[in-house]
Length: 220
Image 1 (cartoon, rainbow, N blue to C red):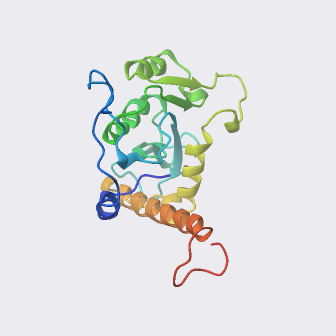
Image 2 (spheres, rainbow, N blue to C red):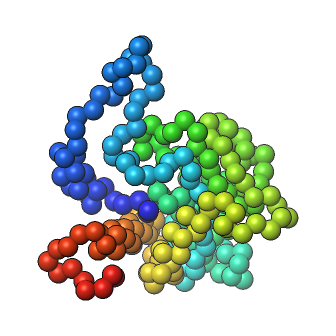
């Protein structure tokens, strides 16, 4: 699921948190009382032991801007690349390679709190290098990387999560072509799109189990 802006999640979390029981930071039955901290309720439902990272290039007809660059797949015209996991994104010029963007993209995980003990990062062949493996090892992460020169469908690993998210975002015309020049504005449009995507998904799932006033007659 795409990341949501704090102005939307904070009010929702405040209402949700009052329904949860109080839980200790450490399990009270542990003999030393100092084992690994429990995973926060704020990331309930997120499968963080398997994450995927990939980049996506879009056109930037508006010119340079703060985050655009010459696109290698569009005859050198201006383009924008976003390196992302389904929980965040890093904006860069289209001429930037995916591999150097891996480290700042993985840094987005730091705000989620304690991660599982074993986390596998799924990557395509563009990340197949010793530098990538060093970046992963330095963070205590395992890598499942497609090998260069070997065909591997996206279904071979768990990369479809991030590929699906890019496709959902590109369905918004404002994101399929970037006309903005300021990175903060571009991020705001991505936050808005991610909010719409998430709310639509929640409504589709709730339609199967709940009834409410104004509920669509057919699954949206």
